[in-house]
Amino acid sequence: MDNIFIGRKDEQLVLKEALKSHESEMVAVLGRRRVGKTYLVQSVYQKELVFEITGIQNSSKKEQLENFVLQLGIATGNIFPISPPSSWLQAFALLIKFLQERKEKNKPVLFFDELPWLATHKSGFLNGLSYFWNSWGVKHKIVLVICGSAASWMINKVVNNRGGLHNRITRQIHLKPFTLKETEDYLLARNLNFDRYQIVQLYMALGGIPHYLKEIRRGKSAVQNINEICFSPTSSLQGEFNRLYPSLFANAEKHIMVIRALATKWHGLTRKEIEQQSKVKEGGNLSRVLTELIFSGFISTYRPFGKKKKTKLYRLTDAYSLFYLKFIEGQEHEGKSIWNHLSQTQLYKTWSGYAFENICLQHISQIKQALSIAGIYSRSSSFYHPGNQTTEGAQIDLLIDRKDGVINLIEIKFYNEIFQIKKSYAENLQQKRRVFKQITKTKKQLFIILLTTFGLKDNNYSQNLVDQVLTLDDLFLDD
Image (tube, rainbow, N blue to C red; front, side):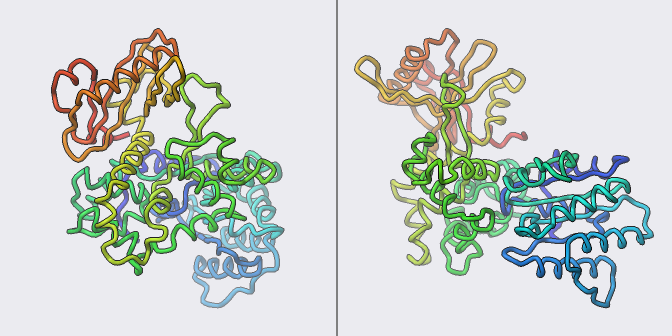
């Protein structure tokens, strides 16, 4: 196993505390496919793991039970084959027998990975798991880790189980992609020395997904790496998008339709707009699809400033899906250097501004830390006014509404050098502040914050308009 282990401090602590407790623990680990759930569990529990099984996708109950006894044979060191049981109740009875005969006295860890694949329809797996836990596991000081990439399935079927597993989860981890800082640390640990501008370009295409990041090679620029990882016919990511959603969701066509609809409008869609553009109707399980995509980490919701709680925007925030739909799809066979060309186009420059904005929204805690307001209660949102006969239109990328009587209006600019405010842009900033104040009728102090790649050139416009400047480095702060 690769010895590189980056970040995940809080998640490691949860797993270690479960091991130290004087009771049996059932730990649920959720998270997007390829985010590193299995690696986390195996790394923390490498000495205590006594039994491990990973479900096989699209396999029958019979095949899953055969898989179970093969793994049990490995755990016991039994060189003779064990006859596969005919039911999961019998399978868990074998597991109990194995655990009872263990000579070691330390607290054992059992790991059931890709649980949704094990628990095939009408297989009786969850009943067997419930029998194992309630009749034996809870009484014998063990750690049972259950893991699955289909986060909504895990929550509906296990975390919120109404049967024998009701309220049995003692600890829960929802593993997120690496932050920019964790991505930097991961690359450095692999002797990959990139500056932060290059890292952000990589992050725009791959996100903070460890499985994707491990494909990055030293001595090559971000553009070269993206070209090889995403466009090369021999890349391990070839076909990843088409595998990604079917591996997580039953009838994934509707999930993909929603993802494609969200990719058409960078700043998000309302529920009604999603229904119109995706053609997935409310009667066609739109609520379920949206919930599953949110829990699995592909989309996020944002509430526009001043709007009711029910009025929210859904936004595609999975970096790889965004990049695939914008650039990879249809370009897979356009030659070895296709990204060298596409990365120089105006289309990419426009898209990179949006992608950088997405990254900033995913690093709001770092932004608050850089603004020294981490300890002040605040809410993040966006603002959009289309304009009418009496008021000009305005859009604000990100605003932070603070309880200390201040609202930060944050302008986000992805630029390849120090940014300079010119007259037209200064007028645009003034208009945004004016329209926001007029429409919201806020009495709070408004501070304009410019978050840009390499900082801001000092001139009369910057001195008169911008209250604080944040740079790329601020997004790399430790969470």
